[in-house]
Length: 283
Image (cartoon, rainbow, N blue to C red; front, side):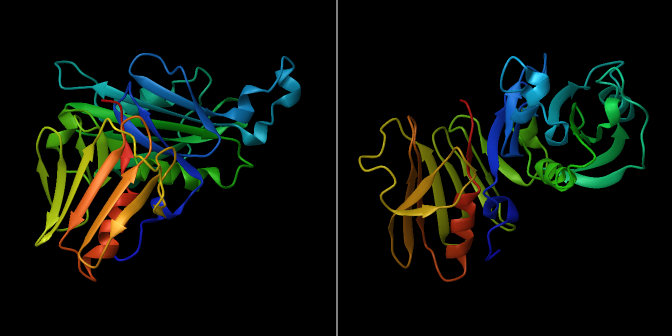
């Protein structure tokens, strides 16, 4: 893991915390949140909203994009199956037609999921991704104009970079770690181990230790060190660094503070990548 993941190197994404569904999303730039209803979070491309009272004149259908993420609680008697939840998600819009292809395997935060394409009203197309976590199921319903050739790949990446943030999700096998009290999540490098207390998230391999905390005191000199590329709106910088240690912080009302010790030539780029994967969430 000497190179940073694609999700970190791509600067055309913005991190959102979908609070209703308890999911973190890395969305393409241009999508903004709208009301998704109880238990759901929806986002639409800003061009699809129109920019004046004459919205029909401003609306560009080829820039139309939406995605809705929803959490279904299924750990109850007579709860719907994953197949039924997927079908209900397909018909979330009243004029959606049937599936147009077979399910394809993918993953959500390291957990297995299925994605299936469909055709919506007015020629709009999209996919439904269903991730069965046992007591809950998470679905992603994405739509776009057929001429929008970049949307399929960008929404597929959105699904694979999603993180599961509820308390129930802490017990499932997934690719990220989440500390609800500190309000941060990170990608976990293979073979690294987690340690958690009330105010610190620690990740360690052998003698290399990274500790992540939140503070209430903003930095005295905001981002005066070397910047670390990270998905907006979070920005971070290395404050001090030597061969075996590193200190980094973010801006904001409650800055993220990272201290790393025991670094060597192998673990230093992994730690930089780990810091670049940090997202912050409401506490």
